[in-house]
Image 1 (tube, rainbow, N blue to C red):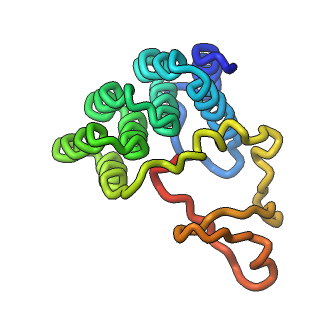
Image 2: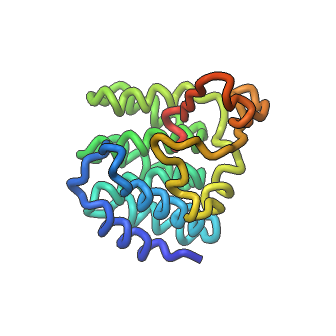
Image 3: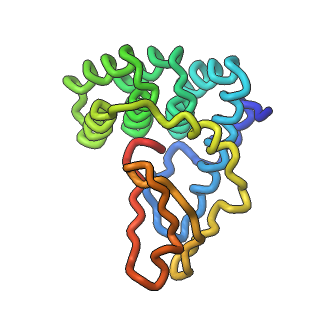
Amino acid sequence: MPDVSKTLEWFSSQWLPDRRDYRGPEDSSWKSYATALRELVAAGRDSKESSAELTGTGLAHANRQVRAISARALGFLRAEPAVPALTKTLTTDEWETPRLLAADSLGMIFTEQAMASLDRAKASEKNRDVKLHIDIALRRDSVLEPGAAADLPAIDEAHLGAAEVGASAPDFTLPEPGKKPVTLSRYRGERGVALFFFYGDG
């Protein structure tokens, strides 16, 4: 089982506190994020103590990047006991990324308490990006798909970065919003395809 403390410290050494959120296509540090998120979700699925450590240690970490990824992982875990701590992160963290990821995660948890926290935070939030995430979370009509927390730890690290700019995209099948499966290769040679990953579900 992955160790939450070790994963958080490794991630902290990879994503420094002053790292900009959005970087160019040559930046591959996102692989560190994907690897850490996968490990944290795997640990949280295996142990309630790991989820509690993410809540207590991760959301209070000195590195704001660690606070942000901890908030994201708790959403994938649908960690209901973390709702008060995520609410505190949403309403008091001085940096917007932990706040907006806390909003996303409260929406992913989707309990009455989580949605009420979002509703209360909306009135006082000044940052437009965080407000957007709160609005999106409040418009959810269902919980995060149950398989998401199982699928994330199953991602093979060798596949991270398999898609390259200018190369043909690797084939995949995903459900469209109506749940009908769509396979990318079905459109090869026919038309362009735009991939859109909905804001707020990781």
